[in-house]
Image (tube, rainbow, N blue to C red; front, top):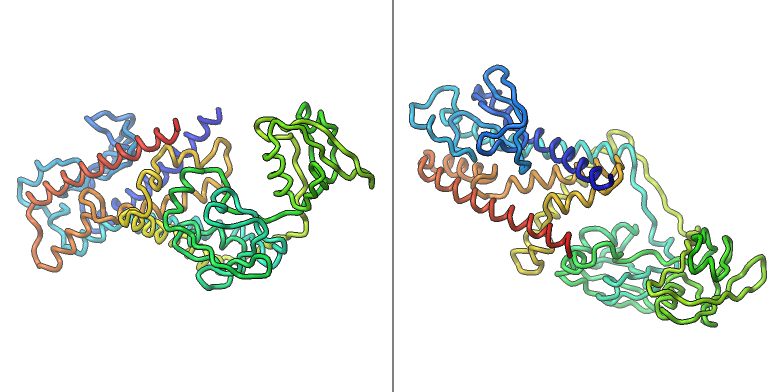
Length: 441
């Protein structure tokens, strides 16, 4: 059932974005009196359609191939490669008969709609949820690095005070794209001294390999046990709710990460864990299992308090817009790293299968709309790439036409469209294959 929910969410999210993207082209074309012959969600490859109807001279429908959607604009060389109508004289209602600036707006229509949708989604989420964060001065015990953080030189108890020389105010900055994309320097306070930790430019490769592992997290004191799983190792050892862990094999563990590290260091070995129960010290004995999971959860250290900033509708707009455009700049930086060879394409790129895993197996509407907003901006960026067959390719050709004062030949545009089609086909095969490989890996 969880898989069906995941698939349903990704289909719903992508369908919304595809329809709105194509609607941008459709409305722009209609505004300039250009005839639109088809409006399809998904592709009706080889003429196979799941559903269709005609309204005012346009065929609306759903195709069987879920790789996007399209509008067929009369008098335009597009992915359908239907050039029959181009053999006749240009008609006033055709794309090719309109001024270049009008055709440019038609081609940008889908991208503009995606940007508007992305901004709207992030605006409404910011207005509804506000921003929740933790001030860095709350992390009096510093941070605890996961294996990724450890690999770049971070240590438990480190206090990160600056990123590239700019003081860190909020904890979320350490988990933002500026750090995780790599290539920055962290100023760390350790044992009363400051040191510089270089975040490697290829950190995205490591993050991809170790999905699910945390880069860093706040350092918590060892606090009381919140729950003991029935039948677990901890239950057999005699742990009870409310116990406070103080030592493992006579080694004090004032911080929970220290306790966790010692547990992992004693896999398949007997241990003695001392706890405080009702003001008295109690020793609990047992063996650490192979997975190092004792079966306890602990209460969070309530000395670290988060804060939430709420915004009025108008205050939320610039913040939401900034979040939306950050998606585009992050995508641009990511592609730049791929071309520079700093990040491997198979690590950085994900397709529908990879996207589906982000939605999860349960419906969470905040997460759903956050991903829809992110994907809307990513779709705008991808379509703006100067690849023939994408909107960006058409935009480049139109700009060339506007500069030189005459259109490129139809033969050239047909060949460019074919080249773009094969580029996109190869990219789709790579992305789907990469997704499947990651899934089985």
